[in-house]
Length: 226
Image (tube, rainbow, N blue to C red; front, side, top):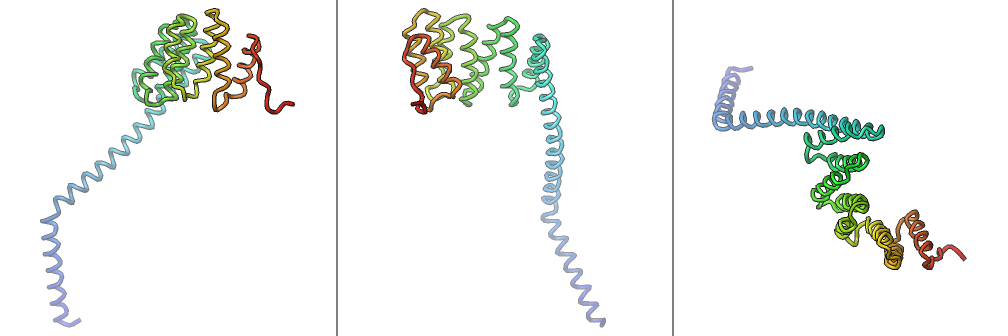
């Protein structure tokens, strides 16, 4: 390599060094801050992800423990565990299921009034999730039917006409009408439930047909017959 080439190389290297120096002076602080933010975010995500996994596992353990206590009819234990889940992890997806389970546990332990409070809360919290809200209202109506028919009907009235629970609501209205001694109204409700579209599930349909038959009403013939 000639002397001139060596000199030119040294000049090029000095120029590159000066350019790099100017670049770092101009953008170095921003790059460092950016790297700090990136790695801080990465660490935060890893920590948060690990925390979320541990949280979800803890919630699942509580729910399964409560469910096991329910199966063994240890109502106090189930209620304590479910309440802990609700108090410790509000807003988690499991809380809706926990409230439904807690309501059933309260009914089984002879506390229907407290069960209705839980279902009222669930129906309000899940107002933007219609199927879940309607499920809570339907459950509340069945419980209230043994306590106060007026209150039960108020729950049923909040279930929309397009709800998947509407057939069950009409059936319960018919049952309550029978309790009032109004067989004609009960028969009308059962027929109305049978005529809903889409048609009710086959098991529900057969039950409604038996109710209509017991009340002396005409029973529809299946299209597949005759």
